[in-house]
Length: 108
Image 1 (tube, rainbow, N blue to C red):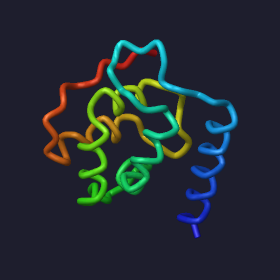
Image 2 (image 1 turned 60 degrees about the vertical axis):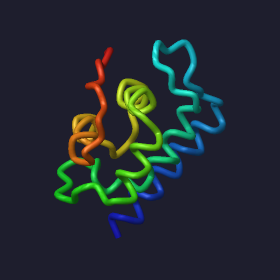
Image 3 (image 1 turned 135 degrees about the horizontal axis):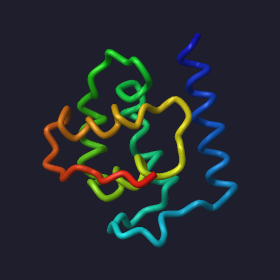
């Protein structure tokens, strides 16, 4: 039932983002969607970015990642923490999905 708990944590986080109205603004990237919309689009990638996950990204994940684009992925991995998501694993998604993305420069 760990999967159900993870889904509840993600749903709670997403709800908090909606309520806070957090958007991707003031970034040097050209991500044209909100932080919230980026998270929603990459939900198929969740199993591949949970800490200690041995699951490779699915074809659905890779398709979503490529459609979202490198600027939005970089905004996600350098933005606020996302509960249950390993940022290092998220930054490996482009290589695992054979996406031709430049590496993200993470600002802490």
